[in-house]
Image 1 (cartoon, rainbow, N blue to C red):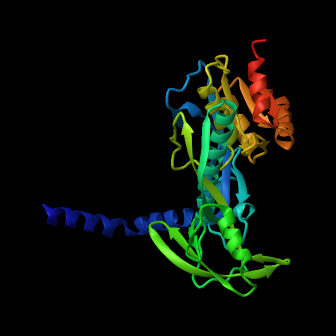
Image 2: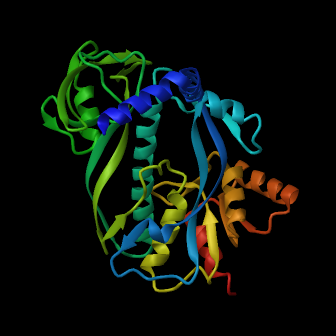
Image 3: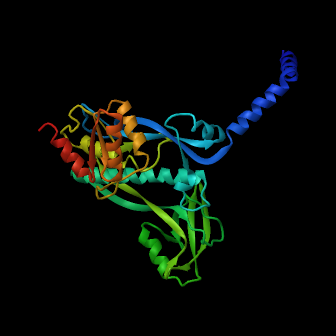
Length: 341
């Protein structure tokens, strides 16, 4: 039986080898990466599917994060962007902090940005709802490496700093205090965790604009306790900080007894910091269109350029949606509380 199959495949390959070689070459060329992203309209995701709160309250309406469909650039998608409506090319360099960063580095930083956005969302929501939120530890992750950095081994974006000179790092001050005690030209020894490996790497302390610097930038990801407990369920292909505001608003309404949705489908976008301030984001036009396509009633958007762009698009496209500009989560809460009034 095996010999018959082998002879059949051999015969097919012999008769069609030119076509097969052409198809293989086409696939390889079409999928060759280029330094671009392709952006197009996204949609909305019900945030009740992205987190669970112990004994949380439900809503008649829904809170939805707006997202952009992002495709890694290839030769095929590059040329298709000139044909397909609403496909836009964006240079990867627009998202690079340094020229040495790879697409994988950008993806790691975006994943960490989502974690930070979620922790800010939790802190803001729990504090405003009068619930318990306590920070236990600060975990430091490398998210930027300057070109002037000098070290005995290569540091990578996503490395977690565990120790500096064998002193455990529990907060950012532990790191900065140790560096300040060093002289220019000294080395500090960093113990970092990379995936499942523990590495010890010496990093040179340099003089940068009259300041001591090692040439690395970090994100702080907290370990915290909350009551009631919360668990996130974001998917592996979701990242970035632009859902922070809507996540915080949805968590807040789940923590309080009153339903602020008024039975409406509420979408929106914007970052959030630990004080409840809402920040602008990129790709707002795609997110607004996704919200409109999903028949959302309200679209929250940061004031400023984001809001102005949305209002302009609404007038041009005659979008049937209420666009609400906000600068803090408190303004959004107040708007929803006054809806029935």
